[in-house]
Length: 201
Image (cartoon, rainbow, N blue to C red):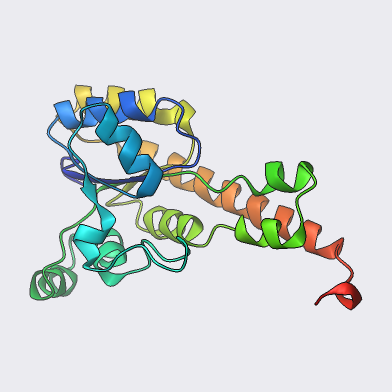
């Protein structure tokens, strides 16, 4: 993997995200973001590109569809050493995405507060896990961060290694993603087990 040049940031937990984005920007990283995350980054005075500018589509269906687009997932999933992949990116004017920073809708917190089924359903994240799994699958080429506690580690490696992270770090971060999405899906499944289908309308 080469230098991180382009990052996609979309987080529910915005702890430290403005500072992280600022550090990335100072290292020359182009930042793509969505909705509230983009607003926080922009308000901190950091240039940010809205996902809609990349995809050519607005966020739609009350935010249910934002990042589910080949311009995003092609940029994440392309194997950089595969000439066919890179040729297809060029053909479709897709730029690689080297860093994905995502954390998920707070489903467990929402249901713990006594949310209705409808509210719980709206807090099932779709785009977030998809982005995370794509980036984690392609860990040889993409750095993925699901936990704000890892921001400093990533920045430290980038500063020491001319904007790069190590393969070992990318692997550990990818493993953390699958641990996180596994727990997330288990929480959703357990909650849905508590719902009586006879009462659905």
